[in-house]
Amino acid sequence: MTRKTKRNLLWTILLLSSSATQLLAQQQLKINAELPGLKDGEKVYLIDYVKQQMDSTRVENHKFEFMAKADSSSLYVVQVGLQPKEDQYFYMDMGAGELKVSGKGDSFKGAAFTGSPFVAKWKELDVFLQQQCGAGINHISELTQKLGQAQAVGDAQALEDLQKQYLAYIEKSKVAAKEWIAKNPDEPISAYVINAFLFNKIPLEEVQALLKGLGPKAQKSNLAAAMLRAQAPKMTSALVNQQAPDFTLTDAQGKPVKLSDFKGKYVLLDFWASWCAPCRREMPFLKAAYEKYNAQNFTILSVSMDTETDKWRKALDDEKMPWPQLLDDGKQQTSTLYSVQFIPTNFLIDPAGKVIAFGLYGEEVSKQLGSMLKN
Image 1 (tube, rainbow, N blue to C red):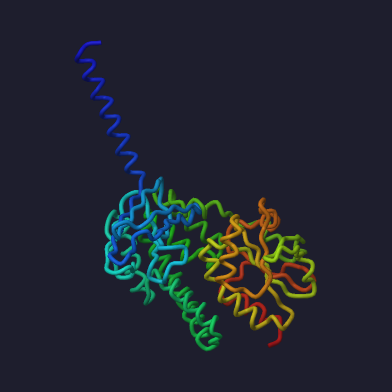
Image 2 (cartoon, helix red, strand yellow):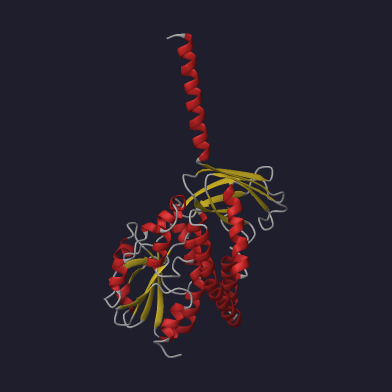
């Protein structure tokens, strides 16, 4: 091999190595944060909401850093500790690139978020929602926390007012979401908009049409891919007016519970999981329905699809749901029996054991029961 050939080969190897390094860098999400109030040694978590994956690191010199593989856009949560304070977590739809967070104290609230284009797009969406709906991206989360607080102290008037605010925002945000998607069809964040403001709030067929109308870049989002897999639940639809499949699962005390044990009552069979934020947002409405109609032959059976029992039990302690809590088995046989393709999903079963409705969210549970039961 001549010296010239060797030199050319070396350049080729260097170029290939450089290209591979650049490609690898393009597939990485890097998060750097510096908050003077963060205590060294504190544990910080990065949660990929879509893939249900969690990474952790510790604060050092009031800073922390994450590096994650980002083959496509996904919804991430960053939080200090497993039970973060209200201002010690944030979420954002992020892809390959970099996010820098800097602020004062130990709070993400009011911190500066800069970095790759996905950061600016997130801010743009927040401003758009404020203009169109009167409140930004975090409003649902803020209302949900207030609903939980009102429920905990038994403030019925506050609960009613907050539920009205919640439903009013949902209606405004549905209109705004469709406008955003029409203007940004190929932005990955548009998949998040569909998931956060339209999924489970409009017919699934309409959601599917919006997803299929997204551009190729947006459809590569992990959220878009997950929702596109959630095909219209044919078996679920077929269960309406049919006898609800019976099953036996173990409750939080380790006792076997059968669905048929509750024959003679109206039962809301609710599928959820501790890691499912939309599921947790439904809890105040389920509690309100239970409190109002439990004395009138109604109960709820919650079936968790958690695979980590400790996280399920922690969520039970946090949520304090006063109805039976069941854990699906390791093979998720009960959710398969009911063809559950996304959560939250629920089924309303009448005293004869027949499914009479499914997919009731927000105040729809109370409205449905109110039409059948006397106050």
